[in-house]
Length: 79
Picture 1 (spheres, rainbow, N blue to C red):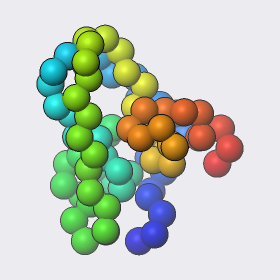
Picture 2: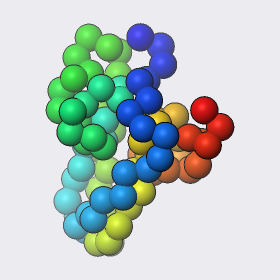
Picture 3: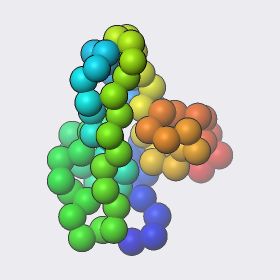
Picture 4: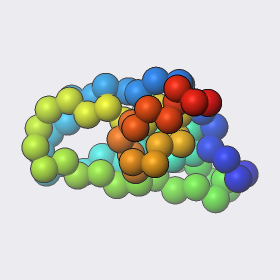
């Protein structure tokens, strides 16, 4: 598997807590989007850890092609 599955062509807006670690799904196959549920096994992808410095809303990438790590950078508009 070379390319991640596009889970959705828009970000997932999630309320996060400062200092808590979240594991963002990088393969796009998780049923618990935008977070990992272990569906990546055997795909060559692995989840990306994200620990916010402040609490608040985060726009997690839903298309899995962001150049900005786990956060949406608008790439989905070009897919």
